[in-house]
Length: 204
Image 1 (cartoon, rainbow, N blue to C red):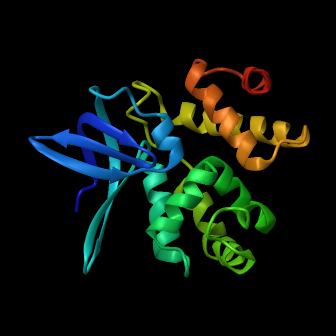
Image 2 (cartoon, one colour; image 1 turned 180 degrees about the vertical axis):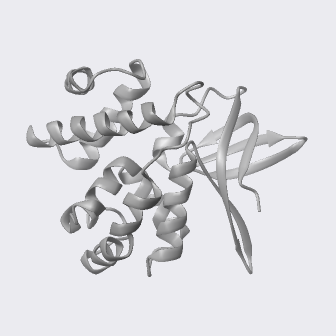
């Protein structure tokens, strides 16, 4: 099982990247939040990966945080009706932070807006994962893109993202748009930027 991949980023396409490692080129499918964290082509990158084997295909999925990969595994393995492709679309629509918050709050309406998910699948997602997201993802793993970031800092970052997204939604933003705007600011501002700066930046 390939659990991580480190090499040179040689090509980037929508939700797809090629990484060369030890003379081999690996095609890796990525959710949008991971795509947004990729370095420029030609630079070194590390991803946490999940290989999915089928009779007629072998597909590699990559994530910039180990906890994102574990969430992907839960979607695919624990929720009936959600396969790897749909899981990737869900994680491209909303960040894992917002998804976990929606599951914890049993927000079926928000989850139903994700591609490939109807109300019944959203309800199953809540039923199957509500207890698991709190237990298995209470501590975030260190991301390769922010060297030296501690687990506690990442947990705090998730809280600030969640608060900023909630604030934008009260101002009339749709959840996916608010989530995307806050993620964009997180990539531009310092890792410890306060919630107020995230909101102001997203509104500018």
